[in-house]
Image (cartoon, rainbow, N blue to C red; front, side, top):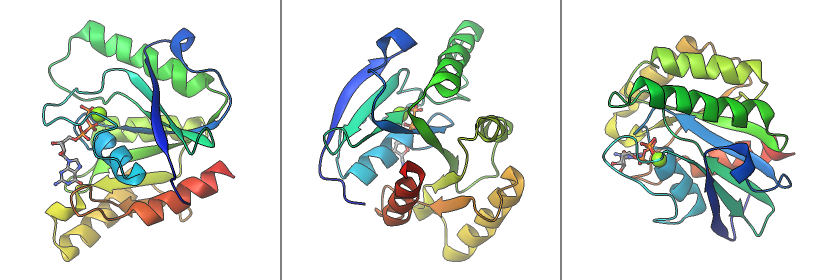
Length: 195
Ligand SMILES: Nc1nc2c(ncn2[C@@H]2O[C@H](COP(=O)(O)OP(=O)(O)OP(=O)(O)O)[C@@H](O)[C@H]2O)c(=O)[nH]1
Ligand SMILES: [Mg+2]
């Protein structure tokens, strides 16, 4: 798949703020700081379209991006598991995610991000279960693959596969925003999900 153009549409915290239904959407979810915004920039080949930060909790809204003049959309979801949030903020996050993930007609698939260096967290597992329940599962990206040796990466990918109970058809794609690797495989899976 070729990305010719990409632009920010809007940020939303509730359905009335979403862009009108229309183009298919592919969303990105994962722990705060796992690299969602970086991965979106990587596959769009844009350096600063999605805001990246070394401080977790940068993305607090649902951010919509239009690809190839409305061919489809990518959606950057706010991360979970960030320690410095209040109970009220966690509840708001849950409501925001639930209303988008359970009610969005155009949503075809969610790319679940996990850190390639670690076992998936309890929340990663919970999130992936949730996606499975809504039939939005099937693509997992293991981020920051540049931080591991080849052998370590292979071992960790096997562990992630087991831990998330991935099926033979579920894709687990190592990616690195630093080394700019993994995009072709990921884009191919996104293309399949859009069909
Ligand atoms: N080495 C390395 N660092 C990465 C990679 N991807 C992201 N990072 C770094 O990880 C930090 C967090 O990246 P973000 O893309 O902002 O993460 P996020 O998941 O969008 O975080 P929130 O918006 O807080 O949910 C930044 O300092 C990035 O530079 C990668 O593939 N390799
Ligand atoms: Mg982000």
